[in-house]
Image 1 (cartoon, rainbow, N blue to C red):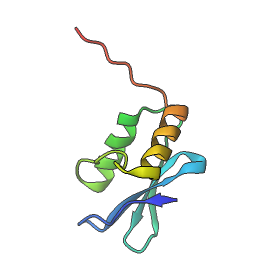
Image 2: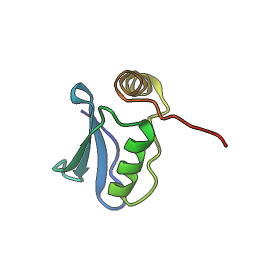
Image 3: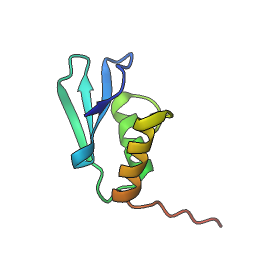
Image 4: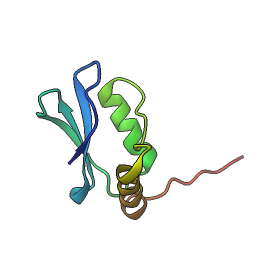
Amino acid sequence: MLAGSVTPRGLRIGLRAAELTLVVLDAAGAHRDELRLHGLTYDDGLSWAAQRLGGAARGAPHFGPAKRLVAALLGRHMRRATHSRA
């Protein structure tokens, strides 16, 4: 599992890549909540994470192998959001 750093609220987000599932962990690493991402958009995942963490989720890592892994997983298994402009 890939997991981020602990927030001021004592929580962190992890990604179980094999299952394409976001997981909320507490500071000790105990499971608190999860969301299967199959069929959801990237924005759905960010919104869910922000609600669980109590603030805006920053999105995918901006560095090296982790960024490529997240992009590959999300691009392959999550549906793309459609944006219409009026």
